[in-house]
Image (cartoon, rainbow, N blue to C red; front, side, top):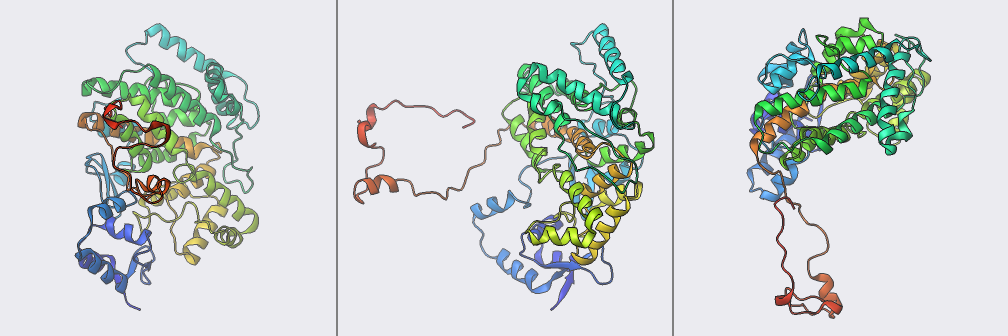
Length: 485
């Protein structure tokens, strides 16, 4: 059995690394860690040669389009971010290098192409008096005695108050607004059962839904106006999900660590926010672009992105990582991994189609904050026995556990960081002024088949109806399809 390097595989196929990784993720090309360096991959030569022969044949447009929608070739132009040769880039700058010192506000200025900014609530409709009242309200909530865990109780209480305030105006959110969060002790070997990001997610969705119902559409508005609105949307999401607005001249990561009473976590939180800011055309970014392509408001786009992010195959995976780590703590890594694989489930938080040699975002987060022992043992066992390397979902969850942050903090950090990227995609899509409306490849019952069956196999002339509607088609009302249908 012959195995070749990534360089040789790319040369034979004549494709970019993303296409090679996509073939591996679909099972078309087998890969394994290189014996000399387990951080790199080797590829089965016969699989590569077979894929090259197939690629030389004539491929139908439908086939190309179908493959592009799932880890395939790029489907739309963007200058925001990309992944090339296993590296993550923001507008041509190495995201890993930026994470060494930049704050999320710096990344927002870079991706939105605007001047330095903050995420304080300060849109044009707000008066100075209203701003002062909001800050006094936040200070009052922050000064209330914390209930439950001493380290994260204040954060939980503040955010529950924010979620409750929103839920009072939106009855549909009341079922999750009262869920309590309990913090963990740093480096603790004991933890409670992971919970969903209920209060934070509920508050964020409600805040964006309220804005989407009142904000102007993006269509026809100037880039400068939309960039100013983007900052306000981001500020509103931060205030909703954290339970308190970001104060003036305070970086978001410092604000978060103050609310969570974990100042030692500031560097980890800062890097996590920066690294999660964008990741080219991921599922949530694509949903944002589809929404904005209709002319909808920026808040409507963020609402779509946040809803998509909540899925278990996106940021919701952090909850599955925490659950797997808890199983490893109780039963050992082998028992946890065996139980997961025996159920036919992929291991959450390990492997990434775009990073066969390891996710560089995960590497820097794991280096910034060493994971708790049971996380570390789990990662080592999976890499040795399964051959998959920890992804950013694992690193984000492990780092939050290391610093004793609230159980839903991985999702909160993921969402707030990624919102910067969503808004960058929204701004770019608004300027494109182009509706995203792909076609579906129909695989259902052949058109007309049911009509033929009703007539004993006789084909019915096109345009004729059946039953009580056997009317002259020339007299039927004609409708004009809207541009977005």
